[in-house]
Length: 153
Image 1: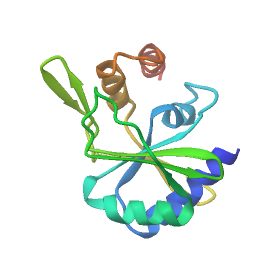
Image 2 (image 1 turned 90 degrees about the vertical axis):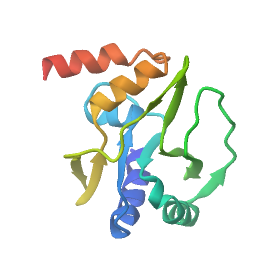
Image 3 (image 1 turned 45 degrees about the horizontal axis):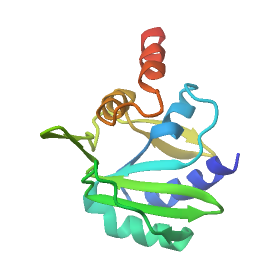
């Protein structure tokens, strides 16, 4: 699958450069068999790694313009295109709620990973994404899918 090939290329570079990162959103759900087909790659990073991540991503592909979204005050947000796959790089992911803010927890403790082509693919926490999707208003109706998965696990 092309999206996985692109992810492995990114992962190799991030791992070589000791970047703290993790796959989130639909691709994370795909790796847990919660959704059947991811459409892009969302990677959560630590803000301290933003400069090196941006350099690596520009070597691998092209940065795209991203539009401001009024419900987010995210410290790091970059969009890239590699081989026609869209990649979002997110750090300090803050969702603005009524009179408060929700910060997606990162870095996470006891991060899980899978191996693809002998490359570590770091996975964000499903519980983080339940809370993040809830804060976002669950626009793609994923909270119940994740909760059902966690309950049956």
